[in-house]
Length: 529
Image (cartoon, one colour):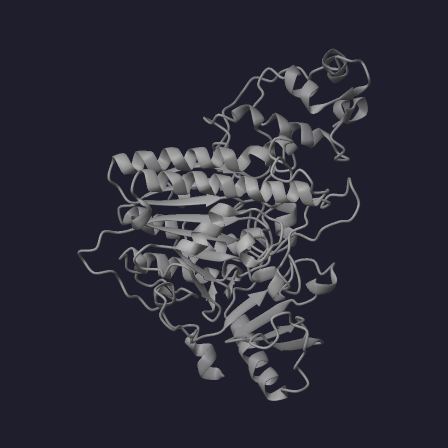
C-alpha cells in the first residue's frame, strides 16, 4: 500500500500526438448538479435527451468517471488545475469573504497556478469560457480576478466577475441571477449563443479552440417557461419543470453539435459532457427551496455533498471521431476530474510544464478504447455540512473498485466493493480489516501532503476606486412610494427594475434588499436595507 500511495505522487504519463497531427478543438460541457441517471441513455424512463444520447452513440460513455469533490467550486478547481482542490484550500463553494474565511478558504482560485486554459492558450489555442463560473466568491467585499486572468481570451459568465453571460445575446432582457426564474430559464441559451459565435470566429481564422460551455442546469433554481415545458404536457410537478430544464439544456448542446457538423469540425473536435457533482437533495413541498430538484443518481447511493458514489460518480461522455470508439459503454476505466488537464494536453500534443505535479493521469488509452487499469488510488476530503444521512463521510479513498469512507477522527468507516455492489449497500469493513487498515494508512498519508489551513487575510481591493464627490443620501421612502405603481405596499422585481435608471444587475440588487427571500420588497426592507 505504501508503494500504491507513492504512485499518486508520480508525474502523469504523457503521450503526445505525432508531430504532423493537427491539434483537435476541445469543447468541455460541464453541467451543474446533473445526476448520473438524468439521461435517457442511462435508462431514465421519461427524460428526453436526444442530443446527449446521440453524443453517446457517436462516442464512449465512461460510467466510472468521478469528480474530486461533491460540490461545484472544488469540483471545477480539479478540472482546470489537474490537482485535488484541497491542495488549493478549496473545500466548498466560494461564497462571501466571511464564509470563505470560516471554511479556511481563499476568496477565489489563485489565477497564477498552472491552469488548463492558460496552457492551451500559450500553445496557440484560442480559449473561451461561457456560462457558470464559480471559481471565486461573491459580495461587495470581494473584487475577484476576471476570467481573462485565468487564460481565457473571451468570457461571459454566470455567478462570476466581468461580462454577464446575457450580454450581447438574443435573450439579454431575460437576465437575472441564479435564483431568478427568468435567468435560470435562459442562462444556458445565452451561453450557447456565445459558444456558437466563438466557434464560427475561430473556424474563420483556422485556429484551434478550447471552450468551456458550463451549463446552469440543473442547479437551483430549477425553472422552465411554459413554452419550454411543452415536451412534457402530461407530466406532473415537480418532475415537469425538472425534465423541461434538462431537455432545454440538451437542446442547446444540440445547437452546438449542429454547428460543428455545419462547419465540418465534428471530426476534429473533442466533445466532453459531464457534471460537477451528483443531484441536489430534493424537498417535498411546493415553495421549498429544492422542490424542483428531483434529479436521479441512477441507483447510486448519496447525492450532492456526499462522498458516496451518488455524489461523485457523474455522467462522462466523450466524442472524438477516429480516436474515441463510437457507441461504446466503458464500465471499467476509473477516470477522475484531475485527469482532464494531463489528458487534454496529451491529446493536443502539449507537454506538461516543467515542475508541475498533477494528481491526475493521462487517460488517452482509455479514451482510445484500450484496456485501462488505474495504477494509483483517488482521494477525497469533504469539509462541508453533514446534514443528510448520506453526507456523513468526510474522507474517502478509491483503490480500483474498492472504496473506503470514513470520518475525520476515524470513529466510523465503511468499505465497499463496487464490482459487486454498485449501490454501496454491503459494508465490508468488518470482513476485510487488513484492507481497511492499509487504505486508512494511505488516506492519512495523503492528508499529510495537503497544505495546512490558515485563515486568509482580509480582502483588499484589487483596484483603487476613483474618488467621487459625495452625494446626499436618497430619500428611500419617497423612492419606494414613486416606484410602487399599484400602491400595494410591495415592490416586485419588475417595479424595482422599472424604477432604476441603470438596470445592470437589477435582480442581484433586488435580492440584496430582499432579506427574507420571498421575491417581494416591503417598505421596511427597502427603506432600511
